[in-house]
Image 1 (cartoon, rainbow, N blue to C red):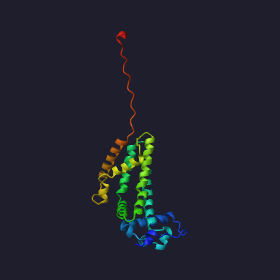
Image 2: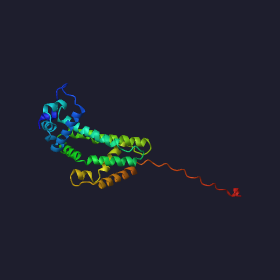
Image 3: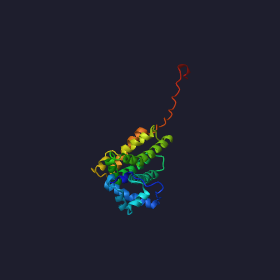
Image 4: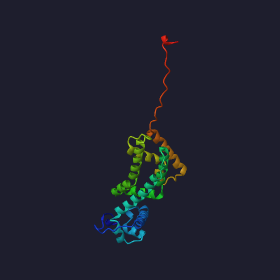
Length: 233
């Protein structure tokens, strides 16, 4: 890996605009290289060969490897997170929405590509702390922001009672990872749909016990009047 891969930027004013199709092709190819070779092993020259362009052409589009990695993660997460939240049920049942959300998030976290990227970031975070920050802000933080905004809206509508939506969003995602995600990342298990369903249902059950909206108290019927001794017929 050369220092140019990480630190050099194309001269100001010389960066070329990318068509959406060209950008997607470059980012998909770069993602394959990052997942396969790790951050340090994924040189700009290797990425250029994977994509089928010259290294000079790649630098015309991206100032360096850090910017290219950020593009890979942020673009992929934008698509995934938007898909997850755009496809949650439109009804007013928080349990139904959380179920759909939990299954989608688990599917994302357990995908082979996402697991490869996560392993890469964890292994390189000590040497490249900006890599870990870029990954967190582009991926997990965006998902947390989306969920926190939804929890705040549900609280305002009276369907949930969540005093700290940011904290509660972290709790829900942590609950969804119970028993499965760490083991899968360590290649100890391959989770089945039944395993995932059990974990998500358990997460929802605990979460709603903590944050269910209080039920209105039904008015009690008035007690019958009691006649005094002098009022009795």
